Length: 306
Image 1 (cartoon, one colour):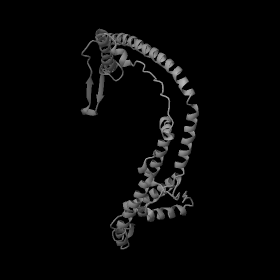
Image 2 (cartoon, rainbow, N blue to C red; image 1 turned 45 degrees about the vertical axis):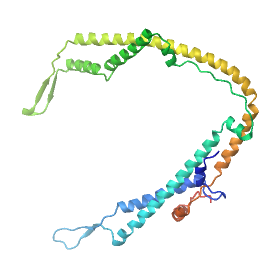
Image 3 (cartoon, rainbow, N blue to C red; image 1 turned 180 degrees about the vertical axis):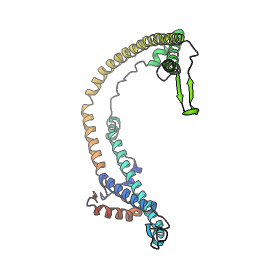
Image 4 (spheres, rainbow, N blue to C red; image 1 turned 30 degrees about the horizontal axis):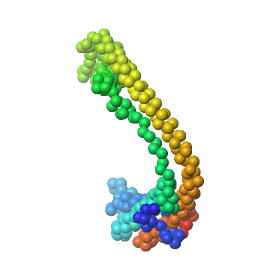
């Protein structure tokens, strides 16, 4: 039943880490990585000093790295890599536990009955109500084509006349230029005076805009009427199918209530067992795990149950 590949993360003898402990260790490992990253990021291979002209003494502004600092970089990078490997292992183990729990919680009555050798009665067919696609497919050629025409017309006009549309923006800009026909930029002799002269009749623009708006509303209204008829047909179909199915499933469920209660009990048992699984630390990660654990103990909060 359970995904065997995920069991590799867990200890068969019950020793290891809980998810809470694993999260804590992962967070401590991230803190260790940040510390080493910061040390490497701040490396400077020279010392900076400053002095005044004519004065022999100099003050150190920044102390450069030593040979020992440079030689320690490789070791720090190895520790960072190991810490990241530990984090990856713990995160994947936590995900594995979640997958196992999800799988257990997804156990169906049919799967449970098969495991127990129980024969189930065939479940009533839930039926299939018509969909919007079914409804439109049932329309005549002319009716269906008209629907697509109205949908396209409303979309095209709406895109132009709604805020942000090209025509709407051009109309708003024209109105602005009527109230502010000039604009001045620059200073002195470099001053430029911009004059905005309407190239079209404001009346024509307004008439066109409201005409498009009327066409849009008419197309949208007719489109909404068709959509309403569609939703009504779909809803009536859904109610009919659901009513018929509800009556059938009621009779069907009456014979299965006891088995469903047993299934729920079994799932709770399985989930509890999975929740008690302990995450194992591979031998190759044991040293970095011990280092991270000691780091956590210094903060008096390990969260480790081992």
